[in-house]
Length: 480
Image (cartoon, rainbow, N blue to C red; front, side):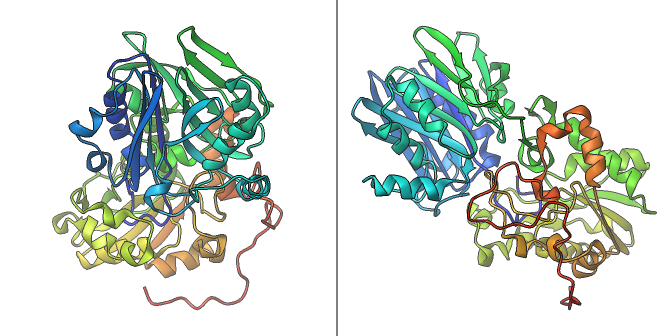
C-alpha cells in the first residue's frame, strides 16, 4: 500500500494466529494476504501437528513464499503467521518470522508486530548470561527470556518475559498445545480477536484479515492482556502493569487498510473526515482534486466532497512492478515514482490541481510527484497532507528515518513547499487531528508529530517536547 510509490519509511508487520481449524495453515495464508500491505519483505507460517511445530519462511510476498505444495507440509489445527517489513534487523531470511525455538520444556513459535526500545539492553544482558543469538531481530530476545525464565508453567514464563519488554509488541505464540496472544501495556500496535463459525479462534493485526477468512470480530486484545487458547477454551490474563493506552495514530493515517476497524474506529471514516478538515483548514481555488494512491485516496474523497471540487484519478498506480521497488534501500527507491505512478494528462493538463497525500517524510518523493504532475501540464499544484508535519522518529515499530533526515524537522512549511516545488502546501493541524479524536485523543500516540514519547530508548537524548528543534541557520534549497 505504498502511498507515495517509494515510501520513505517502512511499513510495519502483520501477525495472524488460528486455533481449532483443520485448515489452520491455509487460513493463515489467506489472512496474511489480507495483511500484505503491512510488509512485503518476507512471510512465514508455523503450524502445530501432533505436538510438533513445523514452519516455512521465505523472502518476498506471501504468494511468492507459499504454494499448495508448501502449505500441504504444514498440517495441524493451529498456526501462526507473519508478514515482515524490517524495523529491527537486516533484511535476510534468518530474520523472517515466525521464529521457532526449543527449550527444556518444549518448543515455542512467535510472531511480532512492533519494536522493543530496550532491545539492546536485553540482548547484552542475555549474552552476558550465555545466550547465543541467531538473528539480528529484536523478537529473538522474547524467546530467550522465555527459555531462561525460572517461572513455571509456560504461561508464567511468557508473562515474566513480557514484563521485561519495553516498547511496542503485539505477539502471537504457538506451542504444542496452546495459542497465546499478548499486547504491550500501552497498546501501541493493533491486535484483534475473532471467531469462525466452527468455533476456531483467530487473532490478527487488522479486522480486514478476519473478514477474509469469515471470522466474526469479537474484540481487541486489550493493552497489557495475555489471552490463552487451548483445549479448555479461552482465558484472559491481565497481569502486566496497566498503562494509559497510546495507540499509534499512523495506523489510521497510513498503515491500516480502509476497510479495517482499528482501535475501535473505522479507518475509512477517519481518513474521509481528515480530508474534510483539510478542505476547511486549507481551501484553495482549484479545478480538480486527485490523490497519491493508495492511502491518500479516501482523504482526497473527503477533501473533494467538502470543497465541492470534483475528484478524479490523476495518478494511476501500477500494481505490477516487482517487490524490488518497495524494499527499504534508497538507491532502489529512487526509481519508484516513475515506475509506480503514471499521470493522466487529460485530467491534469491546464488544471489547478489539489493533490492529497498521507504524509511527507524526507520530501524527495513529494518533489518528484509534484514535478511529474507539472510535466503532465498542470497549471498549479497544491499539495495537501493528511497528517501533521512529521518532526520525530518512531521507536514503536515503524521504520522511520533519523530525526535529522525528516524534512519537517529541518524546514518550515514554507521552506518545505519551496523544496518540493508546489504552489502551496498545507498539513493537517495537530490540534484538529486531536479534536477529531475527541475524548479519546489522549489514548493515541502522536509522538512523531508532537515529540511526546510515552517510552524512550535509553540511548537517545531528545529535546523536551514542544521545543522547536528546526535548524535556525539559513537554508539553501536545492532546485526541485
